[in-house]
Length: 290
Ligand code: FAD
Image 1: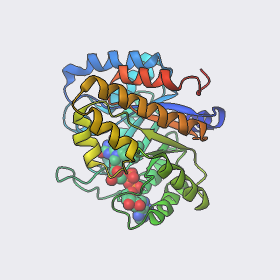
Image 2: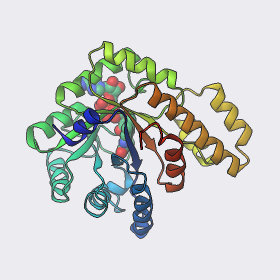
Image 3: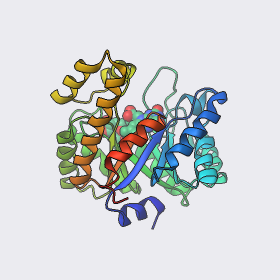
């Protein structure tokens, strides 16, 4: 059984964190320190995003995944994208990961941006998964899912039905987009199970602790905002310390509810902030049985 699949088979709730490679190579040392601090939280795995750093000369996802794997002994999940890639580039990327000892990837299509060419070979994440299964059988892969539906899908039902492609391609687990309303997650999970999705699902939660996140992440995300969340934002958005504390408390209460509600895993979008990750972890560690 695969490493990630085994984690989900053995643990009542798998705890993972997402990090992103810094855009400047000069910031890699600070990033390494952040990851060393996160190691104290014993995450079951840390996922590493693929973006500007992976394609524009900054620190690459492979470098961060390699550091996690070989220096810290933490299982890395390296994100890989269809966009901007093709069979040849993907083969080389998988070879880089293999050389670094990394065997777990999160296979994604990638967001459409004018700077990223469409892949001639992989139109959907499931095409990339088929390719990995056929050409790199030593690699295992996970996929993304969207509790409120992917923005391009006509309906949530259609989006959930498309997850079957990922399951059939051999994905070992799914990670959700961030959400602030647990009710949306439970509804989605119910629909997914009824549609035949049996894969473990990690529920992705992002603590909103800075005003810039409200302006960027919250405003741009299509996530529903429950009234408790909007009340918190309007009350504290001009008071940075209180906003940080309130954002952590909101995430902790969301995560506690998810763990008690039986989530297979929780995935913390910690935005490379070890302090936030630690405070959130302290708020849930009893439920994780640690
Ligand atoms: P797909 O699975 O291809 O889905 C895209 C759309 O196509 C959906 O509407 C879906 O319903 C439909 N669809 C899927 N499969 C099929 C099929 N076989 N046939 C027909 N229709 C289909 N972006 C980055 O650039 N870098 C990252 O590191 C990154 N990490 C992410 C991590 C997580 C946990 C999540 C949830 C998203 C992440 N993203 C990242 C964003 C992601 O790349 C975008 O949301 C992208 O628009 C969709 O990616 P996907 O893999 O879900 O695509």
